[in-house]
Image (cartoon, rainbow, N blue to C red):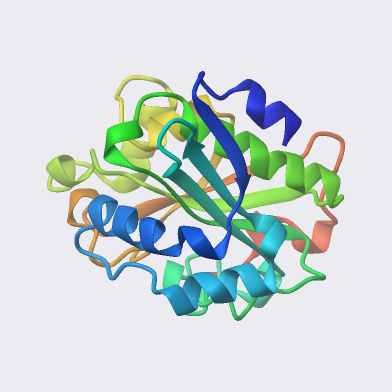
Length: 229
């Protein structure tokens, strides 16, 4: 996580999650996702058990408080559909589908405490996961991006058109724009990724980051993964 630390502002540190973080993480999750059920201690312990190297935490040094997290797991993307929901891709938030032989690092969740947002912590956490991709010799990381700016425009604009305008910087989305600035690429729009995300009108964007110099085998090209239709 050496490179990730370079992106942290003064007064913050990044490390792997420990069991002492669980209560704080659940509390932050409830603040950031008020319409979703927060992680339980049992789920967080399961994440740590199946893939401890993939669960990252940023801490505010002065107070020792958790300021943000990024949870990941390894999956074989060809075992899923391109438009599968978060519930499906994470086995209901349990990470029971973590596959140590998987070629893809799936970014299951990244959230920052409201009191510590806009300090670049998300960028540092993203860099930490990309360092993990490189260290494990993976060729790709995939995630889902909320589009909270889309809900207000859903009646007059298709989600793909909205994504295209955000990519061209003709519009700004509070979440997707940040991901694009951090080097993610949009693959497609999907409906029902987070069903209760009213701000995004139930839509999200599948995003990916390809590790430089690690071209995927043709059989695993993400655009060929079938949808659920």
